[in-house]
Length: 478
Image (cartoon, rainbow, N blue to C red):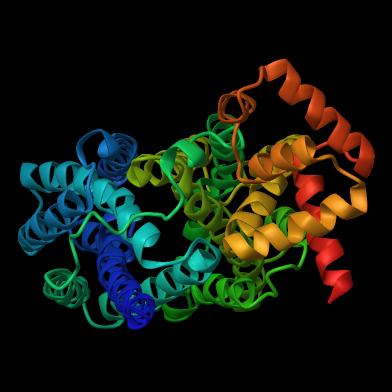
């Protein structure tokens, strides 16, 4: 009996590594080709065609796939089936692009992008079951780092050899993803140990998701502007852009991945906001040489790495609080794609006249400044929600014995009555006032009365502060 938890740990560890490998290989193909990738742009340049319409349709289809995936994929078994079928389809679609442009290019881009969005959202099942919630930021970072390293290899092949060579390499990665996906577990019994009725809406999950999506859209508008305003201006530096493009992004992910868990990341988020603004200022004031590209790209992509890991990890934590994790991840990342889409449309509009004019870059900077004005109040409200969520996750991650020890010590410190201790215990499990009232056979108003007394005795105003003070008392004691 004692070997069972250890055996399950190793099973999850293997699932974690395997799912990261599968999704990274697939994502490398998607980023290098399907999602405004260098391979696709190189192919378009080879055949002298304008890729704008196909790019727009592809991004829109990915948005739709992310948003709708949770309506059709509801189990891990269904997610694995989607991976296997889609990867084979993606290989078939890629073959089409070895031939001259035709209507099949557009059909392949739209259908492939829709399925790719679904595959990204469906990965949530493996992120939730294969990784403990306090480790998901590392799993996401590993996936993003590996997928971008592989993407760089595909980009370099497309630029320095030929678009077809880059596409062939990306297809090989897809084939490897299919082979490894065959080994993915499809057992739906591996779910969170916290009962769903305790997990559902413990910290205002709907409101948190809405504000997080708004935050993501505003930030990623700048990514869309980058694609349309910044990247074309440095297109002549192919030797440098082919490999350095994602290096600052990868470096930022590595740094964020290895930060101490208790470190306050708020300041890093504001630094990233400033980096985005500085990157456009540098783009407007500097030349178009290699040094300028290194400065602008480092600032912009470094900030993108910080924010991508921020909301990916928050979405990863939120998977605990919904029956279908694909819906949470799909909705959250659809906001990311929507921001890129809106930024691309704005960027395309302001660069349609003359990209070398100072007007487009000035307007781009104005857009950035507007988003910077909106971000502080938005982030303040979002962070207040996330703080409660983070503290609740940290407390719920403790064992029942550890939770009881923390609570007993806090009850003695705050001079709580027996009933107040019972209410505090249920409150710290993330339960709503209605659920607490039902379990203790009292009214909701009575629960509110006890909660008010608890907060008053500790001199606090929220559940997050209650968890904070309990954990700090335990730290002081040890």
